View 1 (cartoon, rainbow, N blue to C red):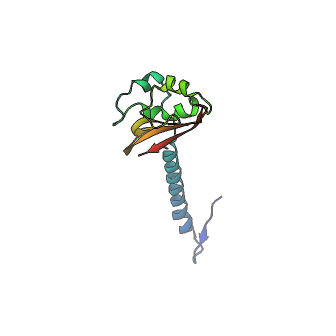
View 2: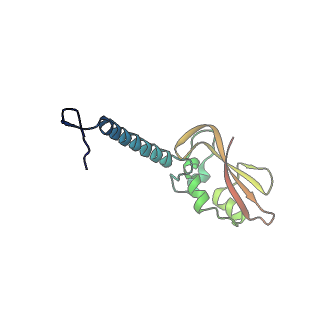
View 3: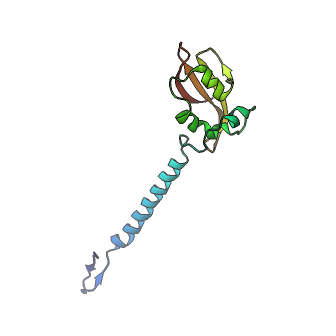
Length: 142
């Protein structure tokens, strides 16, 4: 459907609003769609690399970028179910970087998570119940 306006001489012209506004709306809409897509695909919660227990345990230094940060989301979603025994977790991940108590463990991840480099490092924090079963996992930025 095409709209036009007739001027005083009877000659039809396209309205300036339709000519300038429609392309501008399309550009803004495409920009918003592209921005949302970029934010979604680069979201810190987006998994990027499948978990590999051997590569995880091989990391000795978490002060800089290392493979743990790329694997942590897959690890949390698919390999650390609530109720998992403490011994199973240690067998899977190796000893924690920090073990404040038998119920609070930390695994150093380094400053790179999901392909993004941050100023401060992250840890994977695990909380176990008194029965030695996993209650909760979370990422913490320090």
